[in-house]
Figure 1 (cartoon, rainbow, N blue to C red):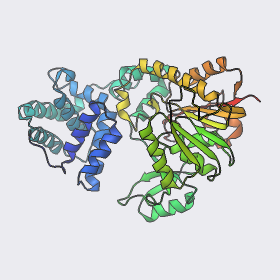
Figure 2: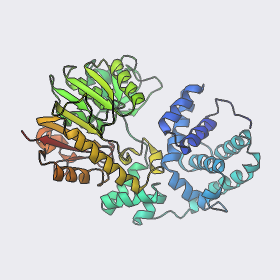
Figure 3: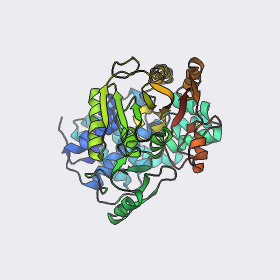
Length: 452
């Protein structure tokens, strides 16, 4: 095989997509490939859009290609499937790429990959797609499930899950939101600066930004300039979605308290807790993966967070370094399906099933039960997941309360700003959706108080 040059943007995107198909995380695979290449910023953005766009809209792309392939796409050679998707994404979603360039570059990439015998099918299918794209019979919006699958790009199991959670109009709106790129936001590190000063730095560096609607430290990046974001090396900010920023506030941390982050990696919420307590709380960060604990430690050093100790442990089992009833606050941001952050991790559409949700709910209930043993009388336990699934959210809490008479649901709206009211359910739990809450990721959180 003739290896294309490292500065070939489409080749890098193709390499990342093959790695993801083999089980890699898209963000890690993309980051590692971009570190090894010498592309300029414009081409790096092109690679990033190709990777995330193809993964996010794979269902839509495959439906369009099905009109022009002589055989079902899954029967084609794996390399051909991904090359067709790369070419089709450019034709269907990237107006700035001329059609002839999208087709020719894809065919040429196949030739460089040593797949010359496959160039005929690539050329034929992509040129047919280009000519016939206006004749594709897309489902109408009122055809909810076909619309979610073929226009919004959701696999069948996930389309059904969305329809179970929401009425038709809302389900369609959520599907459409999940088909869009995520909003970019950062959390200002209040240990080192404040939001107004950081906004001034962003504007001076050529970026367009505005304050988040709910998180007081949050900034939305509306348009990035050519320069890096200011303050990266100095630790002035942390990349974080606004919904995620709300979790530390909901835990209501205070200086002098002892706080446990039970599933802490990669550490965004851990360092936020440190900032909210001005480094005056004792924070214990636990994660099952020793390697991921290094991310917490690196982040803490960069942001100037102290009084954080890290421990590798599976929190489904008791730990001798965690004494029962010894924490004022416990945060359990539990492992979950991640269907609330599919815009950021789009491969999650294709590597999970409905059965995974039920299995994860069992794990979440075990983690919640074990975490509950560590909360002091009168203390708070916050359960959160980046999922909109009923199985992983309300059902977990209902089962927990049925088995734990020492805990009560502590309705959140009584302790948060009035402006946050649209984020809460009638029961008092937080539930956010990207289509109706300023583009935030879909999160769920419930606060539980241990009886005195």
